[in-house]
Length: 218
Image 1: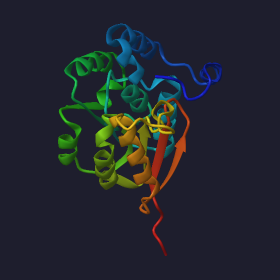
Image 2 (image 1 turned 90 degrees about the horizontal axis):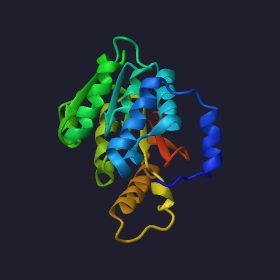
Image 3 (image 1 turned 90 degrees about the vertical axis):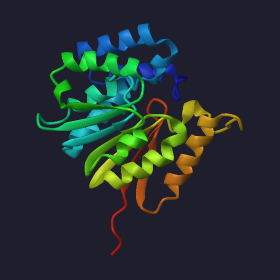
């Protein structure tokens, strides 16, 4: 995945961000070996640490993740949860799920993580809120549907974080046949025009939008 910011700046930022624990460094290395080009789906040190800090700052006890991949972001967020906290994570890829569960079993925070296998939209119908934090990083054409479901499950002061909102910069000049870019652009417009929320798009990794419910009028 091409960097949005220059590589040397990315490296400098990483060098001035809290280092990852050895288990997560191992997870990243194995993901790169086993998953090939798909390893670009990892959220990585900068974004993972941002997610962890957001979860900690919110004092979150319940987190929902839509799109788990090999479990890096789930473990980063779970580390910020209290011992009685819960992170529910959704994925459809049996290979990725088996991979992630191996690392969950080795982490002291893995006991906080519940994996739901199957289409996330079906899983979301079975869940009850509120969730203090929601991270969306799954198939792009369904981002709008994930967003609506997440907003309905979100705690009043909760936050939704959405990954890949810059789509490697392709949102600036998308091809008409790039379904993912078109879906991301439609999602970005939807959030920006949604009077129910306040939002900020930040240029971390491939772009992350943070969303909160708008204060009640009055």
